[in-house]
Length: 162
Image (cartoon, rainbow, N blue to C red; front, side):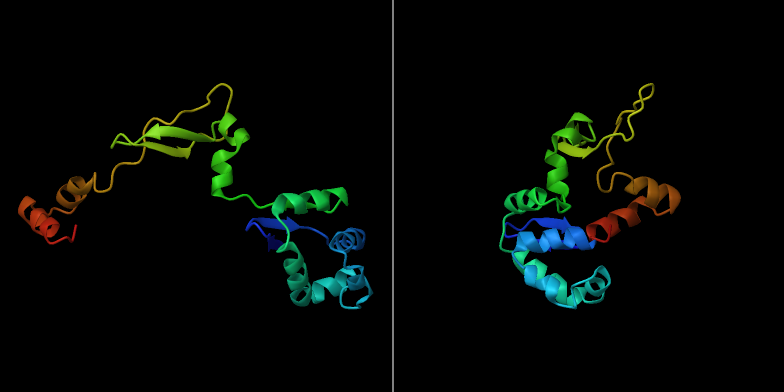
């Protein structure tokens, strides 16, 4: 399940087995939960997760991500941060693999975009151009493909329709 930490980061905790569950409630300081028949077995926890998850969420919500990850790791409870798009853009491994690259838009502005994946040793690929600017192909579509006259295109543009 995913839970929101005190510092507004999302974490996934996997304590599905009975052994890991006991380690989790030990970290939580809530060994009493194991004595509750609703939470004593893997099956009962699954059947009562709507009641159980808010208890875990309340605990997680009081702890910053890094501190929580360290506590869970010490007790061997599987957990990980859910990375967001900002994390991906700042990840050194993603940058080193050139999965995110900087390119220049037609306007001259620098723009971060996805690189070529996968990287193949003999044909690694490259980004040769970016997407066209908004409206770059209007004439081709409206005039050539749709057969709209220059005057009609001007009228539609002046009216804010295209």
